[in-house]
Amino acid sequence: MRNYPMWLTLGILSGLLWGCNNYLYDMGTRYADIGAIPSDGILFPLVCTAINDMSAAVFLLMVHGCRGVLRSIETLFNRSGAFLCVAALLGGPLGQLSYCLGIFWTGPTYALAISALYPVIGCILARIFLRQMMTLRMAIGIVLAVVGAIITSFTPTESSATLFFPGLICALFAAICWGSEIVLAVRGMKDIEPDLAITVRECISGTVLVLITLAVMPGASTLWKLSSAPMAFSTFVVAGAVAGGSYFLWYSVNRAIGCARGMATNATYIIWGVLLQWGITDVDVSRQVFFGCVLVFVGVLLVSLCPNERESTS
Image: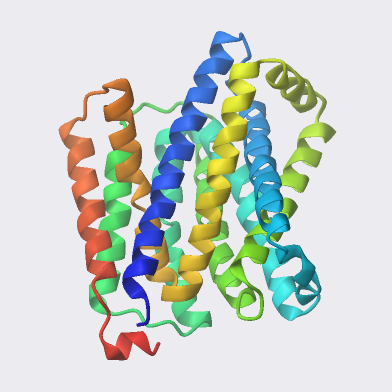
């Protein structure tokens, strides 16, 4: 496979940037608490997600606009463009809102564990619809990476939520949306360059999420309060810009080396997130977290081993 080591490195870099995004997102939440902005309930994550995706859209528009990428926007007005638009709606508003509802109704432990199944769903869909090769070694690697992500993030809790099972369904729906998104996006990028594709994706997602936020009066109020808290708001904006870079690399890598390897290398965000928390805030790393990170690393290694000739032609 041509330039495979380069694409592998870029895939891991997308995971690093996503880990940075998660760290900044957490810091923004802390600043919001200091600013007396309520961070519980569904509205706060909705507003934060809207800021995140809109900031990513503005960042990508500035970067790719200066590069002249938007001049080829006419390439979107075809079947491939339709695939990208559907992918944007699935991955952004539908996926993120379902995930927020899953967190709100079941708690972050179960929502994160269920939504971590998205690489498995994406690989299955890629095998069916894109005819991408899936060897036994790659399948084992994906499963190990997913199990590692679940172990790393799982914190046993007692849930008494009355909407527990609907919350599980929402988290599973989020995983289906995210797994479907990358498959549809890869199909759309058959005729459209990744830089234009991800810019359109973020513009659609950010615009829809902001409109939903403004349509809900408490959401608009939360957005106004957050914009009045400089540290919190600026942190979320920077997090969105970092996410834009991660999204761009994620789309590009999945197009170049396939969904299985693209999603596996991006899953290293679990490891990067733990390293950032440990290195910057000096948080203790438990045996559970360490074991989960080892599983993610081994899984990514199995998926990413240099492909043989048969795999390269898939």
